[in-house]
Length: 269
Ligand code: NAD
Image (cartoon, rainbow, N blue to C red; front, side, top):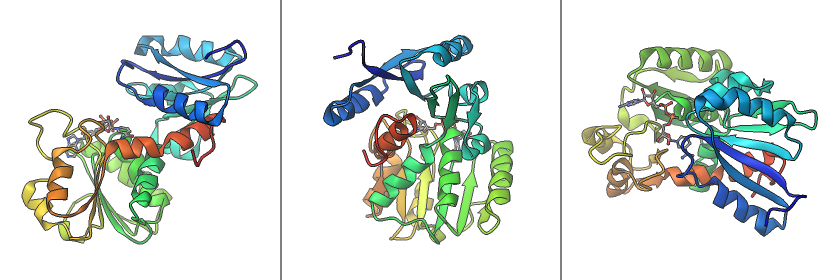
């Protein structure tokens, strides 16, 4: 039950009816016996400035999770961001300091890597392909570089996005080979769909069926799409006997990271 003493965190997006974070966080708070609650706030884009002003003065607010479409706007409206959030130009979590300062980070990519590790996939020294260089794809690409992949290939029909991300990653990780062409599909240990393809019935596959047929038998195949849980891309990979990782697994793996950044859960939750 929310009481006068309850510390609050929020999830900010628009719309928010579909978000799972309030259930997941409030269950975790109940299990931990903490007097903290998460609320969902549906704030349109033209309300973000007013929301950030309110958040700075909101004494019993410890932070907020940020979802579509505000990850970029909030990154540029808060007081400071981590180095990776600065590089990615986006945040998915904000902590409110006791002085009202708002500090942001982006842990989408870390959640992805955690979920992969829970499948026994170790990125260090491996070759990875990330399809899609938007918010999720950039964060995953960055986290895979932090986790030590030897080769990272990225692709997106938006050539400017590909070029910007490749340059930023090459500057931060000069030891990693960053490719902007897919080349030989059979070389990859990890293939991630970081596009929305698969959300709508009839979407094309992010990688064609003949390309999926070329993936190596030990490849780990992941998707960011949360609904359906098993996308047609993952179903095709599973039909080939490949190891698969779903979007909800990536989301669940972030709970402790988001909560720890706001100071309301531990990273292992
Ligand atoms: P976005 O719009 O920022 O990026 C999507 C990118 O995919 C764009 O750059 C687009 O050009 C690219 N793209 C589209 N078709 C492509 C194709 N055929 N090949 C290569 N690239 C292609 O969106 P986003 O914020 O990155 O979200 C992408 C998906 O990830 C959404 O479905 C979102 O719900 C999901 N997501 C999941 C989690 C999670 O925890 N599971 C977290 C964040 C986002």
